[in-house]
Image (cartoon, rainbow, N blue to C red; front, side, top):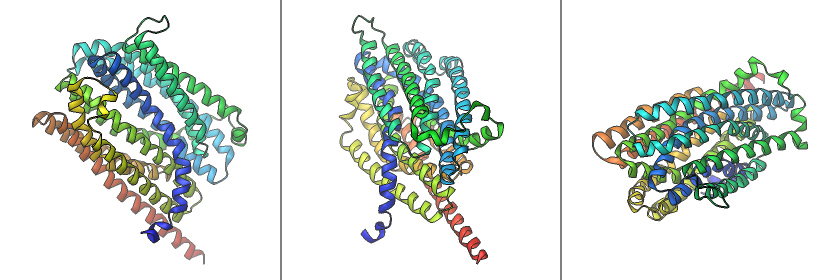
Length: 460
């Protein structure tokens, strides 16, 4: 085994050096929602926690769609940087900033005015809906600064600068937790705000993060060679299309997966507030490990983009396999944690014994799909770095909306298996996505290597 894996050691080091800051930064998006759930679960009760679950299940779909659009910039920046075309990097940032601001405003309108109306017709508890509506307004408004932050973050990460976004995310989450507790409980003379308190804390946190990240990009000397051609005058339809050609399918990939989990939260709401709150607890725990794997995936996309731009296909394949090894080891470890501590972990978020009991069973299933979840997101990242996004988009739709969600609905609601039945379907969807994306990766990289060798032979 030492001989087999020894050739990957340099790639392990490179990928981890790039991935660790990205992992921490990516984790920040989930920690915001986790901290909201912890604060509400302990200080506001089960009904409020169910309301957070309902709103987050709607908001997270829009959030990942927006983040997917922003991610379209990273592989392009990585490829042009690999070609040492610095001028094009600055021009792409101009266009990405325009796209993401417009997208943020559109998503806010869709979330608040569109989803707000839909919630009334999903068979949810009236008590949960009454608390959900004010929270929805505040959390949906935070999508605009989040898109601004993501634009600068993806630009910096595409160039291999990942630590600053990590640092900003760490401080932003600390601020979010402090403000959330102060606003929800009502401290230092502030009137208790209940569930709206975590909405205000999230909005303030994301606004400050966007401001600081933008200041860092524009003021740092390391970006000056890339920003010489940054100007709103370089916003062109062709460049916008180039970004959207990658960003739109990536947004759809994330949307198909996350919306399936959000739909599962709605199904849980039809089973009861306890089941919905338990789903929120379990999905928060699983989302932590997923976002860590997503960070490794983002690093894999950057390295794949670099190697793809330089036409170094052998290195691309070796680096990609190293990313698979890393995520398999990591997700196996987290799966063991979820199994061993399945009855202890839910208490972090809630003190309701009924919710803890249901969540403990769901965490066993979360442990099972850890491996599938990690490998499927790595496959998406590698293919994204190569500019291969259309077939993976179809794969995600097939896995989650043709296989996973219908199976979960049938098992959970029709056959009466309840929450575990819904999660059986989610596990099946992740398994299908994992296998198909790996097969796509192996066939695509093999084709590029064979074509490169063939062209070199012709030159000789």
